[in-house]
Amino acid sequence: MPATLRVLLGDDSFPLRVLTALDDAVLDRPVSWVHSSDLMDPTPWLEPGNLLLTNGAQFAAEPDAAEATDYCRRLRAHGVVGIGFATDIIHDRVPPAVVRAGEAVGLPIVEIAGRAPFIRIIRFVADIIAADRAARLSWLLDAQRAVARAAVRDDGLREILHTLSRLLGAWVELYDAVGGRLSLPGLRSAPRGVEVEVGRDVRRLLERRTPASLVVPSAGHALLQTIGQSSRLRGVLAVGGAEPLDPAGKELVATVVALASIALEQQRGVQAALRGVRAGVVEMLLDGHVDAARRVADSAVGGLPAEPYLVGVLRGASATPGLLDELDLVSSDPQRLFSAERGADVIVLVAAGAGDALVALAERRGLPVGTARHGAGDDLAPDLRRAVQAARDARPGTVRAYEDLARRGLVGALRERGGEVLAHSLLEPLDALPAAERQRLRESAKAWLDANGAWDPAARALGIHRHTLRARLTQLEGLLRLDLSTFAARAELWAALEFSDGV
Image 1 (cartoon, rainbow, N blue to C red):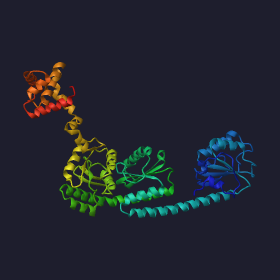
Image 2 (image 1 turned 180 degrees about the vertical axis):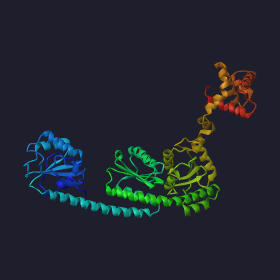
Image 3 (image 1 turned 60 degrees about the horizontal axis):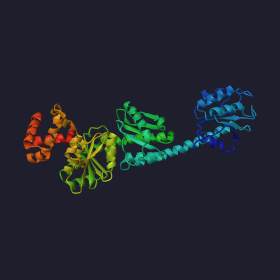
């Protein structure tokens, strides 16, 4: 329990009387020490958080209002938490000008009556401060032991961060070496309004390329601390809550940072080996050796998602800075999400119901991701090809499902990928014709193609003679430089007319 005005005023052994209004924030403000002085300006000997005791020798019986205001304002600006003014020594009461000045600037004024010795008040507060420090030291030792126990569990890094969050009642965020926020399921994250500012300051720390810490007052006094050595920073740990961390809390964060640095370095070699195992498991699945792949995965990396699952491809993502480290953390439950490198891509197998993790990863990293469903007993290879195709169609930061791609059909896919532009290029020679003639040629070509190249049905549909239709198609061939006797040319013309929409 820290020393506060509330604690001091609540002790009946001191004849104290409050002369100014006090709210809960003032009453619960920690008192760092008690100092006595009768100087008009004692601030050179004071620190923020001090309680000042005085017998008022610096004031006349009726001090000037301006002098009293300057005195109180000076102490308030220096961070003094209040004034204890002794009466029955020099003044029989606290001068009203001092009381009014304290009220005006928000500096608590407390009367100390009965010639109460200052040393008793100083000792009382000192004992509370000492007891609080002992309690916080005991808490810190217990907390450090709890963190050390967490560090030796499976997935020790995540466990120590969970333990830190619980002990401090704070949110905890872990950032990689390039400032990307790592997703750790179950870990309390920063409020949405704080993330942007914390992320910006994380990148500032990493740009220094040397171990450092930073407090962000506008983000709830969040504490940011780099992880790793100056030659190779591994990331940043950010911790914040409703109140700034006290020295014991900061010391616990320092302990966690040290353990996290060790854990990350120890995991580096292990994770590199496990990545190779996971890549081998994927190749075995693609070759059809499903049972063998599952045996290897069960014994080496903790298993695979149960079928049916989602096959995902993070296109060109294997070289993305920090991504593989993040996936190592996210993939700590491989039966939920299993990841492996394959060439320039990263392959993920995602259990049913865990697709949101993949969507969040794509958004956070700005990666194009494609997915395909893999059913029980299906071959993985064709599903992977479908996911690759969907990834090629995905925009950065989005997930494209192959099922959606297939539902649009080939024409729909071409339309989304710029088919109209190519259609305009093919039909551009028609722009030189009068509008009516251009429309006649388009309608004639559509009718002929819809009739599968049969002249008589197309001519009847148009209400013209088949020779007229032949003449129009011959003119169109010349303009577009197409040989409509071939299927390829007919298909190209049909697609261009479908995409052009009145061009």
